[in-house]
Image (cartoon, rainbow, N blue to C red; front, top):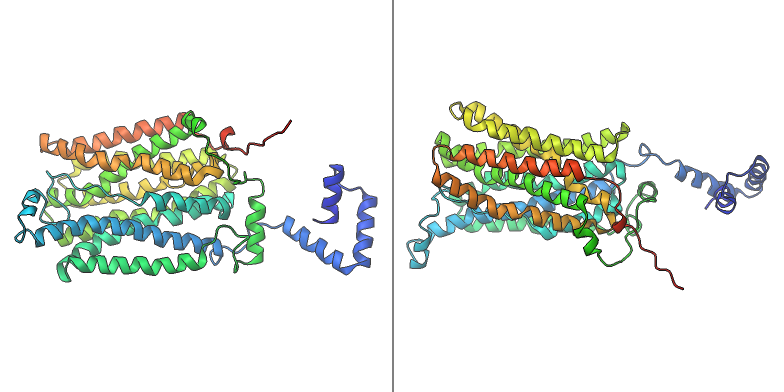
Length: 440
């Protein structure tokens, strides 16, 4: 602590001119004191412009987490693709597989069959947000989280693009060998680069470490305390995040599971063309998801309230993509328009990443990891329900089934968004603050 800061802490006010002259004299007599005072002043005036940006440890951790999310989702998607290939390749050898006749021949499914849901590694998703409590300065939190989470869309894209191709050319076992090997490789930079916080990181730049710790100085510390489960259950801001995530995941699961099936069934595109075309929405979503984080942080620098930024990002990622999906069945006669609508809908949906998906870091930073995992688990209920209900709608009404699926997705997404706009907050909740024990 500098001498000036010591005077402030003792007296509660800034030092007088006489005291400042005395400190200047001491600095002249003792160069060590003067150097320390200058360094401390430099730390106090540390600005984001002076801290390392893209070539920094925190962005390196974001890109490593991006790769890990890529692997998590890619392995889940290829599991669904290769499962069909395994069944079809062994169908003539075992009578046990006779019960799987309803499975589609191609990995994208028959429009009247209910595709398998796509789990997305809930433990990995929730656990990674414990990092950003300690590593992300508040005005960079949106972009760092968006860079990390956008790896999920890239994983879906690459898995859909290469999974079926590898199965056809090399055989389905090589899908597991290749994506499993990529997962092992991505673990190496995680073990080397990722640490709990900047203070314990052995290679972080001193300027960056001081910048991160000073920017998080006012954040609630994460001392070990029991989870306030009762208060969480009664928290409307937390429920608004869960319901909004559920509605948005319903929309995403509809697009992820049924986009390839829709292209195949409506336009009669063969499997390989469908694979390439169905990756376009995911590529667009991957790019827009990263840019959305930068947009949210830009709005924060323009004096927008944090809760306003979170809700604006959520609206931009929910309403336009839902509307475009509803319009899609009416453009079924035009192949180019349908692909463009699918691409825009998937891309714009990822603008919600810096919205309600990271809102738990705002309202309860000390419990963010648990809340991220819990809200994600709640949202992923839709991954189980969407295939069941959508398959039922397609079987009951083949003519208007797609329209009913997309209208239902719009309605559920809109209800979750409305609940979030009414009850969503960005201030640290009372139950998430440190509870000090007093002794009589």
